[in-house]
Amino acid sequence: EGIRNALLLRTEAALLAGQCLIQAGEYERAIAVYEEAMRFPPPPPPVEWGVFGYGYRVVDNNGGRNTNNRDRGDEEEDELDAKLADEMYIRQWREQSLSHMALIDDGDDERLFRLADNIQSVQFSSLQLMMEGIHPMSRLCAARGVAYDEISNSHRAIPFLRMALTIDARCIEALDYVVKRRLLDPEEERRWVASLNFGGNDIGGEEAMGISWLRDAYLARLRGGLGVTTLPPTLGDGDDHPSEFDASPVQHEGMPTPSHLSLGSPDFVSVTGRKPSIDHSFSQTVDEAFRNLATKHHLGKSSDILSHAAIRAYGSHDLRSALAYCTAIDAYDPFCRTAGYVHVATLVGLGLKRRLFELAHRLVDAD
Image 1 (cartoon, one colour):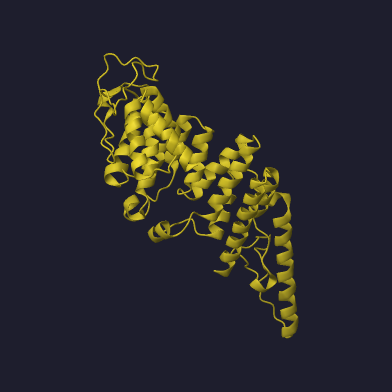
Image 2 (cartoon, rainbow, N blue to C red):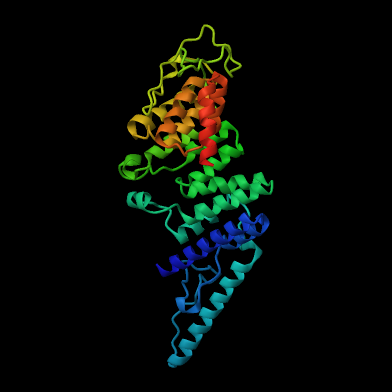
């Protein structure tokens, strides 16, 4: 346990140092810090920790330490030989850990997963998933990926961001960064989420692991699969009246009208009110994810879920549904600005000048 703690502290120290360097704009120095923390094997522990160090050994041609039984009468000589063997073993370990071959330059390197398991088991129990934080090596991979992207090296950033979620599927920051920066196309994003392990192999399946909602939350964040919805009948407030033209370039004539969305309990309707899109099946998958989040996982009032619902509705040119979600966000979490630009854009598109004026004042007062 003490050995794992030492590796954990080493990783946490690298994360803290890297964050400070990134805040100062020193991205290349931050990457160097992350590289050192990802050496495999890591630097050997102190001699007093014993030959087995972190729990594994560098295998030599003789299978490691010489354990052949030798018939000697002098016990002191045996102890001296054992000490010399230990020192030679530690020296060999140190040489390997400091060599260029110990550096992990590729986020797809399987040694990352082995190093992560040395620091903290990657086989999470249900209690660990609910109580413990994100795996430190997952956070380190995400930080290194972001640093690479900041210096316009996205082809090296993507594998590390992928590995962050491979090690720990709860590292949502990695997914958010990839989607926000559009480092992958929509199809690659879907395959990525489909490949993640949310604990389905555990006894009792995902429900027992307590993170079944996470798969639906990830699907709700993805781009693509957006159908085109119509605008509901006139929705005014006070003297405000929607403009004759909305912000959508899509002609809505002859298209069926979807149901209204109830505040705080999103009605993620089926595709009956949608014009068929090229990616119809994925649109249904995302709609089902939103329904699960609202009804099965009882996250219908989560500002994060409502924000992504608003962004999706706006991307579908469904300004009234987007406005309904933004209004719900204001009611439950007025300081959430994830979909703030959608709120402004929908009010402009619908010509609701009074509400836009009020929102502008609230934003100024909150600044």
